[in-house]
Image (cartoon, rainbow, N blue to C red):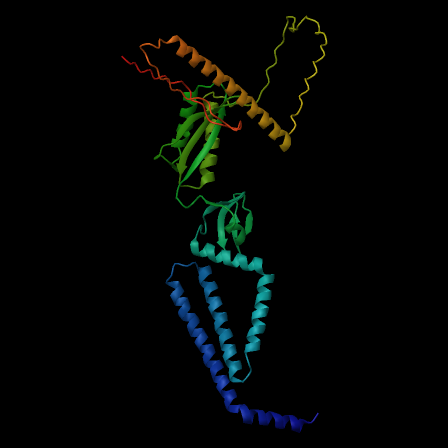
Length: 373
């Protein structure tokens, strides 16, 4: 290893590119300072908006990364390094990373939509499919819920966006719907009064609209009373209060809750089952079904033959009718007196042409009689 040669190459490099290297260092320093100033300015602008802090931090991170990439490309360009190939490589690598992390990127995009649109916020009580609880935090990748039994549920944001979300905290008040099954011998009016008294005893239950109790179902073992009331307090606190105090008040007022039961009775009489004393009928063989011949299709020659026969038969019938008409006219001429009355009889007869073409005959005969004095 020739250290003199190496030192000579280093000196030549700085001698040739010293000014360019100085410019690149200055651009790098100025760029870093500019990035910090831009980040501070973006942070101040975002604080004036209504975006969540998570969304603000995410936007600041994206802007910061983009500024650093632009600064690196500018410095490399000043050193004379072509950045076209580098951009192509980064684009290819970015596409590969995006393809491999498509689920994570989907969660990030859905997280941004949730943070921006605000279908729910922290401390809201929501239900997503079969899961429900209080929102603990909304993150870029997922959302955390705390259930009523103090369990933490982490749900991916893409799952939330593809599911129906029920927010019980948006309207400020929530309606309780509860059923109480009582025995059939219960006084309905008394049971309704007891349930309403329990509702009025809790200050967290809203009185406008008023709580209502109605008889809704008749079941096998009893009747079902349906309670509806509204509250702004935590839902489960009011729910458990009503359940415990209604049970206690039912017991104090002698109201029995319904439950499944079986009633057994002893019979001392003889059980006689009715039956038909007639013997079985004699066997009768079914009659065979008549054979139905399927009509055969006529050939074209057979069809033409039948058509000609039908024409000839019509011609014969028409000739017969014409002869009958001629005989009637002859008889009419003979019966009329010829001395004083001259008669002229006109009628439409049947015309036959070459024994093939038949003109339509007249429906009636017309007789015109002129009298000569």
